[in-house]
Length: 605
Image (cartoon, rainbow, N blue to C red):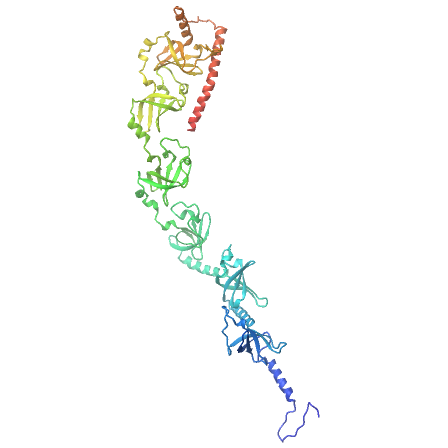
């Protein structure tokens, strides 16, 4: 009998099976497997926990055998496992039957596949995904999203502006938008910037609806430059210029602000077409100049800090926003200050006095020297016209000599007030810097703070009696005052000076026999040669004086050497004249150089 067919007797009306029972069971079981009652490899199915062992979890998914999954795959974020027998879980079928005849399952893979499916669905629905920035990677940041899946956040997509230090974002949790998704490659690219741009546009629209000039608004410092700070007003940035930050002086915006600071500012200008906004912070505060006249009346002593120094003075901050100027002329009574930096320096605390206030022009004049006694006041209390003073020559000009009377007070002797009897064309012929001078105070000009002095006024005017006292031809002994290129100035007696022309000078001889000129302070023999009453000038001659002295020594009457009309001067006399001229020039060379140097020193002062 064949194994494939079976013939049996049967009752009428019945049909008996002819197939092999074992073959029917196998075909049915195979059919059930093909039907996928407990899933195919690579699918996620639901399973029931049969037992929780020490290191494994046994799960029944309806197959011919149970699957085993490592216990650690069921641990939560804190490493704890709370599953128990009877719980249902989603598992991933790695293999329907391994070498041991068991089903190979994985819960971790099931979780990841579910996350990928959720992410894929979120992308299709254009939903946002929350994630935590975990680490910095090349080109950007790594973000951990659902189920521990890693996604990439490019550096250009982190914020609206490039961020230099990305490390400070690690550990921060944000909402992201998926801009690129590839499930097969496991590649997810996120962006935070698109969300910020959308949020900024919404804020911008809302801000522009209410923005207007004069309105006070709040914002956040977004960026700082040398000339100001940019403030985020809500989707639109405004410029807070450095000059509008404070009523006081600001060297750099970083002195007042840091990135992220909140500020309350006033809208100064707003251009709707260009969307440019100018902001002011000091405009939200009272202008300190509005009460400057009451706070700093003239005469008040104040304290401040030197903020800047210029060629003409120093600016001192009296309070934030209010500065005064100490002009260089108001720094010292007695010293001629060449530059304010010689007296003050930036940052120095100083005490000064308010001289003048102009609140409208925002100007305050300050004085430093006013804290000390005014030398002029001390002088006028001590001296009056007619008093005799003694001082040193401070400077010499073409028109007179300036003499220091008291510390900070000078008087001037005009060249016409130097001598009654000598015409002084250049005061430097008689004086040099540092000489001691006696003089009479002629007048005091309080308005201009000037003092006029006179030297000749130390003596009475000799002209009414000059012809009686010093008639022409009278022999005198005179004191040499100074030597100039055109002769010698001498003093006949105190208050009476005269001039010896070059051609009337007689040279003396030194020990070596060389001819020399008289020295300043020497006494010479001379004779009154001429008196000019109109010019008030006395001219003397050493030649006649020498002849008179010689005749007196011999007991003979003196005779004036005279030159007949038309008589020629001898070669010896001409040579003598030339020698005198050369000696005078040689002697004056050093003196003129010294005078020139003294003038230069005076100009420097």
